[in-house]
Length: 429
Ligand code: UD1
Image 1: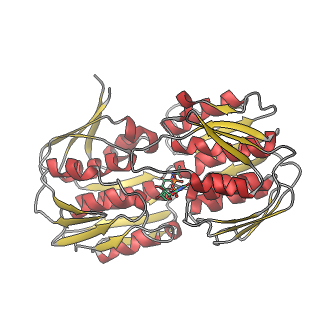
Image 2 (image 1 turned 90 degrees about the horizontal axis):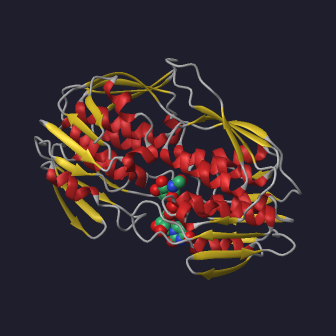
């Protein structure tokens, strides 16, 4: 199993190309199930989760091709993927395929909308809390689906097809919003989704659906209005840049010091994170190509934040911010309000010398002057990248085990960081 080894202490300087967003690419690929025509997605990141979803979609009958690229091309452009689900040959998403990735559960809405039935295994994904699917199921029931749970599977039927309805989510959920939005595009009549999530990735999916012929109003707002259509068609869409990858590199540079330009970064998708880092004393300036981040020899101010749905501070950057605050000048407080078990990085950061105590959903971080390299274990996707950030500043060598978590969501991370001067390499057993 691969490991990542980092010798800390190097400042980062140079440029990093931001990849397409994983959390947009996955649902965008799933929208291909809604049409027999070809959906072409550009700027798709090459990630383990993307590759796993290709297998899952292939099992439903999607033909998938990826455009070739000239070797040694020096500009990052992501992959161009063509997805054609001319016929859905199987409406079951089996446990073996979907258990490692929660987003694969989102095939439920499109399969139900197009084929009027689906059988989808209850999801897996990162071990960060119970992560139920009640909101997904409630939303689809509001569109007329009949739902049963049997042997770890959701059995859903909509004889005669889904019909529009009023969906009011009791809690903000990215996945449930996407699942119901996709389903509603082919439901008969009008659907209103209230208390919808407004993460930028949802806007990206909605914009793609509109290109495919869907009728959606309120994109980017908390109430979505969808008029169902009889069929959707093919489209060409470019995946938006990854704001979580962007935020991760902002924090990496903030931790090590130095100056890096993040090419393609979209500052408007991560204003909360930029505000927090600016308060901490990090210099972040927009450029005509993205964002520039710098920290010179100034100390890091501690921060107090809580994670919130967009546009608040994202839970997907909580672990990375905590890694950064381990070396701040004073006491920081981070409250996790989205996932109840998303603190597994704490004990690993402690192995590097961080001083963190937990009180329920709140972590109190007393900044230390130095971290020391040690072997650590990646426990989930975002936690594992927080260990990379800590390793980049720690004195000596840090070895990160179980990096397959990292490969689920960060494309070429060791290459991107080593191009900026980090001493980081992947070691295979
Ligand atoms: C998505 C993101 C993930 C991010 C999360 C929150 C993808 C592929 N994943 O995950 O990276 O951390 O949004 O921004 O885009 N909940 C329920 N019932 C449900 C669904 C969710 O109670 O039916 C709860 C969850 O347990 C959690 C909260 O709602 O406490 C938010 O979860 P949700 O927004 O659904 O996360 P995901 O869509 O799984």
